Length: 231
Image 1 (cartoon, rainbow, N blue to C red):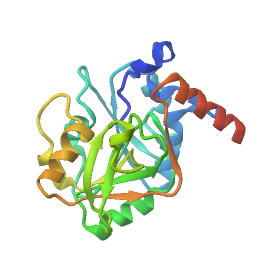
Image 2 (image 1 turned 90 degrees about the vertical axis):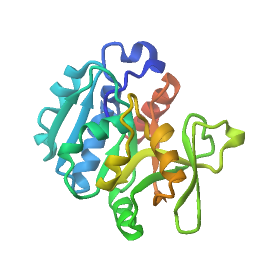
Image 3 (image 1 turned 135 degrees about the horizontal axis):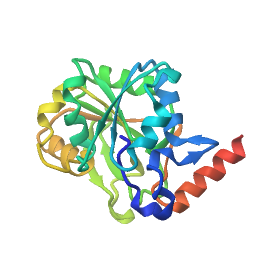
């Protein structure tokens, strides 16, 4: 997922798409591609919208990571779920990862995929624990890890837990016909709540590690300072 404009970042994304913002001396998308390659992923489908040429030029065909990247330009933003539906013909018959390209992930993907298979899930959401859930999708799980409540961006006082949607999923291809043909179509607002209402097997896995969003100048600055301190 690499098409967002990042309007809350103001002038920082005037000339660059959000996934190209530098953290730790590299664009945030580079860290994600590293993670995918280390996890055994070989094919990446990347959507584009704002300043698409910057991502194409930097990522190229993906060979520098041992990946093969296929791009799709969205003249109108399709939303997170709409993008996946748009890539349906490329997805094949096996479960696949969805990752938000403007997040920095410090986690292992294999654990999420293994859990997805164990639970025979339709969708598995990578979850992270946070004290401040403002601006995030939050969930409540049953003892098996099944999602029984999903609320997108609740008030802090109304959040069902401190478990937040990390923008990292494993989805089975059977989910594709269940994605509404509306534009935009979003997992948090449109798909996950509808799947839960239908009783579909949606699970969440709390992952060791962390996720950092860069949705605001303050969050971007905090991640940049953290990465600088670790270098």
